[in-house]
Image (cartoon, rainbow, N blue to C red; front, side, top):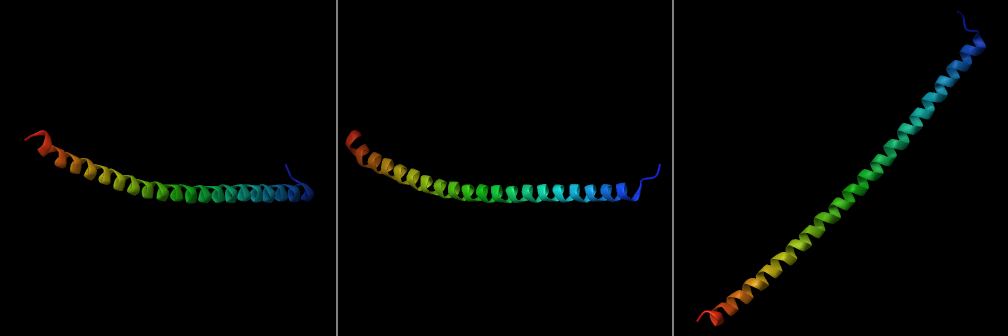
Length: 78
């Protein structure tokens, strides 16, 4: 079966259009993935910094509790 030149040209154009649509969809997906990756890294950075602050608070509270224990132990146990 032979395809006439007009039909063949339309098939080629449809194939090119489909390729352009797929390329645009791929580029959109990549753009969204890059954006989400940047958001995830920013959130991770924030959580790491929060963890550092919480660790400092825990250390300060531990030092306070130990200081109170050391100060009260001689009073409780003569």
